[in-house]
Length: 304
Image (tube, rainbow, N blue to C red; front, side, top):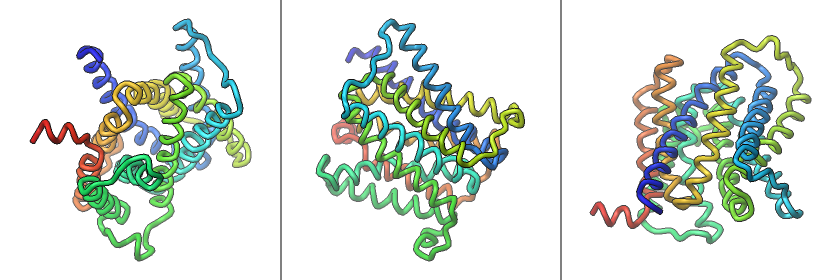
């Protein structure tokens, strides 16, 4: 890849991580104002899908449909794990815990992906990865326990923390499914299919949940929903998927370390959230452990 193209990919990756950091602030605003946030979640992905579809049409490539049962299975799997299940855990989790703290828990994502890849025989394990996984897990337990790493074992962790852990597991599943999907679809098509299939499932759940009154949504809810749709989904998902194709999943996933950093900073400025030092220390352990686990061996050799 030419250096200019690689630099542009890096810039887009950092911008995507900043947008994903902002999704925690937008999600927290919606979760605090609405007791039934699933309609917002569904509308988010409808808007995101329309934006992505519009880009595909303007680019002249058209919108191809999945060709067979396998590709349709990928479409619904992307929507179920990456949009529907993640959205349930995300919005209901943020009704119970601050945005910055939730983002620090989800920073464990790359480590979980590495461990699952090792468990199913897709990647090897070495001492560096094992040490990084242990450090990240210790940090995650500290964040979940609000400074007490043993809180999870003692049964004193609340529903909010468990739901955010559900975000970690559902995103890990989405990542593996997404790796398979990129062999069939483009980055834009993957985002489009995931958005519409996930929005359909969220819409059904919203109808079951009830309490849908769009006229009662404040400007904060509407602006947060639009940010989630356009920046947090249509742009960020597509740029990250494209980076995975261009740089590789391991290289691109290292940048996810920036998401909790951006989230904590934005939460402090926009929501006036202040996390305690033990939680921040746990977050630093997560980020350090994730970096150690996912950094490429060649990078370590170059800096040695």
